[in-house]
Amino acid sequence: MPAAEQIPQPLTPNHPSQPEEPDPALAYLDAAEHILRRVRETQLPAIRRAAALCIEAIANGGLVHCFGTGHSRIPVEELFPRHGSFPGFHSIVELSLTYHNQVVGANGQRQAMFLEKLEGLGQLILRNFVFGPQDCFLIFSNSGVNGVVLDVALEAKRLGMPVIAVVSAEHCAASAAKHSSGKKLPDAADITLDNCTPAGDALVHVPGLAHPVGPGSTIGFAAVVNTLKCLVAAGLTTRGQPPLVLTSSVLIGSDASGALFDQTYDDYRARMARLYGGNPV
Image (tube, rainbow, N blue to C red; front, side, top):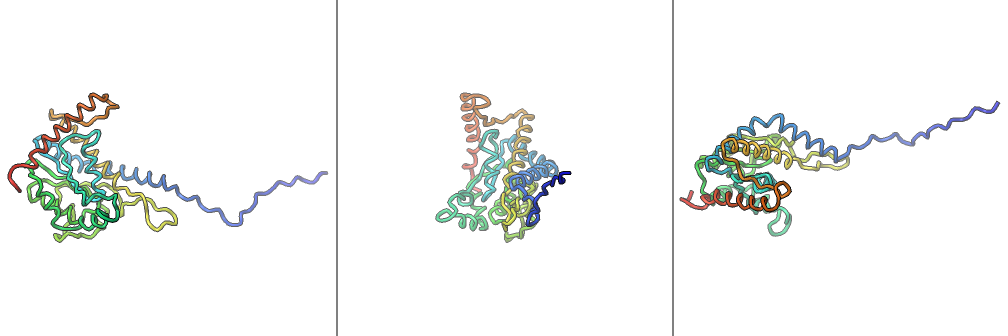
């Protein structure tokens, strides 16, 4: 009888197989989805209260003043001006605190990080404007502890304006108070919104890399402010004051889009006019 056919056996590896490393791209997207879920599940009641303040301000001829330093400038620019946004939000952006692309040299990052901790600068910034009785303030800071944002919040309160703070609750809780008042931004606010970003901001741990990468605060900030913006637009429309919305030519054609941009900017200019006149503060 012929010898039994030998079935080849798989080669045994010299060392055990290694578990597949996680995909950092999917890890970031999963973490980003988690931030959005947390905003949806935990922040809507507070966002609705904040939107009610903004609706009252804009509907009664007031303004929602928006301030942030560093990368917290990003949500300020989400509010206005861009497609899908409307007048009523007044952006206060100091280039000395937000101009990051130089990094080193003149106007570098070291200077900006020094200035945002400096007490007294916030009051000087607000001294440039004449605020009205219907105005409110929206202040962004992931940590909620630096000197300028605390000064702006405390000065806004002194001037009688409601203050809405947007922070990372986890990052703020993990950060030591730096302001001489001993306060953090939520301590000076009437309403605090959480951007639902974890302490430290970065979301992804890469095997072999000592520190995490992929910040998430931009996603959390954008989710909060655009949710707020949509609620404010709905509230104004319900009151019979539908806002002029910057709208892409893709949706309404070039001529209509251009005309609407001009109307919106003219409306914004009219709202801003009283900020630079009247009696000094």
